[in-house]
Amino acid sequence: MTGTVVIALQRLRQQAAQSAWHLVCLPVAATCLFPLVWMVSSSLKTQRTVFTDYSLIPAVPHVENYARAWTQGRFGLYFLNSLGYTALIVTGVVACSALAAYAFSRFTFRGSGFFYKLLLSTMLIPIPGAFVALYILLNQMGLIDQGSGHWLARVGYILPQINGGLAFGIFILKPFFDGIPKELEESAEVDGCGVLGVFCHIMLPLAKPALGVVALLTSLAAWNEFLLAYLVFSRHELMPLQRGLLAFHGAHLTEYPLLMAGMVISILPIVAIYLVMQRTIIQGITAGAVKG
Image (cartoon, rainbow, N blue to C red; front, side):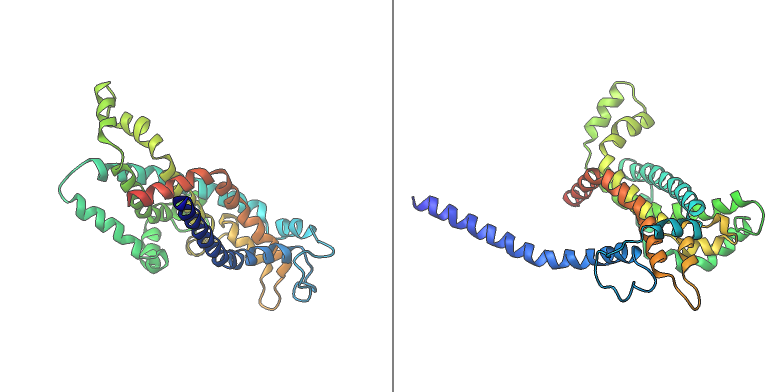
């Protein structure tokens, strides 16, 4: 009987601790969610009521703000540009970082540790900090938009972002590959599978959660990129989606409802990607934490 009472008291303490932790987390979650809710609410108001109507649900929601934002901000063109840029950047980062991480994890060569640490150290340098050197390099290679050859300018926009995402991708994937037993590769090699076959058919499927994390975070960075586009592009038809938001921000007047509607449109693809890949992403983050 005494043991039962002790177990019951322990459960009550655990439940009380969990409830207290939830009470702490709820205000933090509300603080994070409120700007998003306010953004959606403001996108359904008018320019006159956006700062006078404090209700989160407007009495008369103006859904037409989204149609106006799409047409006035030329979101159709910019949306397709961002979609193409993001797809190519994510593909390049995932493919190259997976190959490099597998090489650092499984192959030993002179200076491998030094090069691995040197590569990771590049994460300390933000892309804007290298804009001067980057502009000179891209200009010498003819990858700056100068009115002709828009495909070269697109390449000049995509390649630096792939290069900038490699270090993070390798940082996530190498520990994951380290945790995969080598016996699986040896068994595949006995069955006649080569190095590339082992990588494609054994390692990549097992690393799917980590690949999902790299893909999502790279998508987020590429989709929200803005400064590099202004460095490389001079024509509006090459700009990504974030350029469309400037259409509602003028020197003397900012159309806040249309700006908020445009921001809602711009975050929808990332939210959709996260909802689709949510389970894979959580598995990847959890596995990476355990391996770390």
